[in-house]
Length: 351
Ligand SMILES: Cc1cc2nc3c(=O)[nH]c(=O)nc-3n(C[C@H](O)[C@H](O)[C@H](O)COP(=O)(O)OP(=O)(O)OC[C@H]3O[C@@H](n4cnc5c(N)ncnc54)[C@H](O)[C@@H]3O)c2cc1C
Image (cartoon, rainbow, N blue to C red):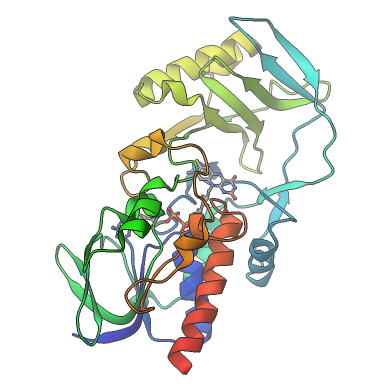
């Protein structure tokens, strides 16, 4: 069995960014990803040329390391236009009406060709041989000279292993010897950001809803669609947002019916003539969200210092966004932690 300097478990933004930095520094590594695709919680589905953002979408200037990476990779981005007015639905406790959106000092951006352009740009910089898809890691064992990483069908070995899974999900891996009890407890208590969210994206032929400073921004506390924002590109007009999590036990078909009914109530029959609709319930994604996640408070223990402490004599590290000291849970957190780990590993390997 060939021994790598580093094995990265998980090909989301944190694992891929780490691979990108290791690649730039000629480190011998392998990245193992459980799904048949890269990107994890960054997931754009393109339908009829229209990028449906089913995962991470927005970022800002304050996300400095992400912005630096985006500029380095020359990926296009543009401001999110939320208009001057939002439709606010307070039924059944109030009415449906418009409010003025206070002008924000900070511009929010999204990727021009979809968030997945970030994942594509990173993976283009990594030789295909260094990435293994459909490789769900189920055990990690410390041996005398190296660490063994096992999936159902294959085994790999490395001097250093970096687990870039949401901390809460890392418990699905059997670690031998067991991790410290206090560390295991922290993993268990760490909320996976957006792990229980339900994303919705709808594309139309035209933006029939747009009028007089209203671009499609909708907020509602009790109805199925909770937040919605305009999402145009040259292939069409769309609305992208979130379904209220209290409906996350409904089937996707039921959620679609409820969402369209809600839009018909606001905009009339034209809302039924959508070109495409897509809903993704992250609560059911077993390579993102553990069943326990919904019992945790949003962002619980995110960014805790103990999550960045190595195990097994400094050879086993944890590296998803939730472990970052800045913006844990967000895309910027994933990049911040990947950069930090890359520096630590370089120092260790080149020592
Ligand atoms: C609906 C939604 C909306 C969001 N919106 C935003 C936003 O607007 N702005 C923002 O900044 N952030 C947003 N986020 C958060 C952002 O997506 C995450 O912070 C970031 O993508 C996390 O990257 P990661 O690599 O740390 O984790 P993940 O993306 O979760 O990557 C973990 C990877 O590990 C893989 N994996 C899991 N188990 C195994 C295993 N046993 N073996 C091998 N591989 C495994 C998974 O398949 C996955 O690819 C959103 C997230 C969601 C879900």
